[in-house]
Length: 285
Image (cartoon, rainbow, N blue to C red; front, side, top):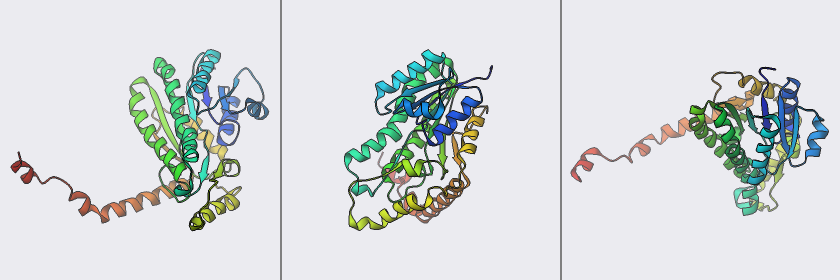
């Protein structure tokens, strides 16, 4: 196939990553897919000459580098990078241990950074490629009980904006994906809880528990349509830097922007009062 691409997809053994892996393989592309256990990948996808399952610890930079090198050695190039792997840790910020918070960032943020760092030399040399970084609506709107996840995903959004500017001269495109609620296994298997609980934060726990108990299986987003949208973006000459996925994500972000604007306007006078007054500045020169 003249348009056959090589995809590198993290977190590919379940959820959105698995759906994307199956779709691009069905379309004749080649895929290097990562998971903590290659057995999980093979069980879900099978084996073929177009599929390279890789056991990768995204928090281990050397392990990530090795997997990127293996991809290029096996397929000859790399065209599309999808940083999809991640998990959420529920708990008030005060409740999270240093280790819990840092481990959340290791996978959701630094895993993404590690992949970018070692994929870019190949993409830069090719003068082509597309990097998809999965954030979330949680990367634009903070909510109680999700502080560490918010911190990571907000960072992924900013990271992606900076990266898009840096790599544009090399013909490399960057899109940060912000899904709403999609009917995958993420709530059931990707949402953890902090070990420590403080009684005063009971409302935070109840909100998080309600999400796990009542949202799973009722999400409005169709993962098959989501991954089809990603594939479509690889065909676009000028894909967006930001892409919201899901009508719920779209509405949540509109509401957030409206609330931000209202607050900014309310405190505009105080905000602008901090400027140096030019006449005083001139007198002091």
